[in-house]
Image (cartoon, rainbow, N blue to C red):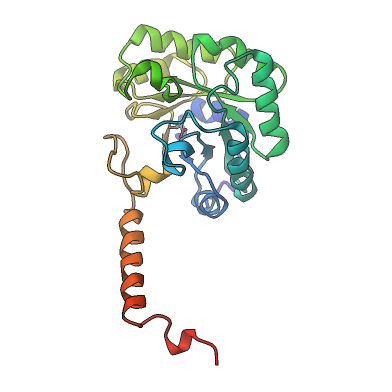
Length: 266
Ligand code: KIV
């Protein structure tokens, strides 16, 4: 466990940025994994709508529902003793109106122990972010590549429009968000945005100059399937280990080596 065992709070994010203390974020979707990540000292656990691709097996995040996010967020927040837990608001749970966003985010905070929500979009979501913050709901923004727009974008690719991404990040910060995810943008652009904001930038595919980094758990563990973007560093090939264990199990059952005497009752 990290030496900083107190629960992380939202205001600490800006304080950490002010003193150049980098922020680690990982996605988490269940209790046992969240227990391990929290004990490892991860600062923030994101209950991402990436659950739609990593766990549910869809080709996008669009199918994920608010009830599903709440289901996963409950488990993760129950496990986290120190990490700040942030839950994604899924597609169409906040875009309809500010009122809808407050209801959805309010449900997340009331029905789970999460401390904040994340929403995708820059200038278009500025009013929504303001509305959420005004009623006391902390918001993490998300600009650059925004996976909930995949049907409009056509493919997941680097967002290179410096003007657009900068204006979006500034709008998110001015609206009161406490941090902003920068996804799939060039390193220099991420560095320039990071220098302009007083809230921390959390990068994914945005180079090393952000105030923090977020990685999808399944990428970190080699459970991401065939396609893996270049920024998705695999720290432990757990996928290979699971498959090898299952192959040994199948062989042991086939050859009658499992269960052994010592694993059986008399
Ligand atoms: O859903 C998610 O996991 C995310 C991260 C990629 C930032 O939004």
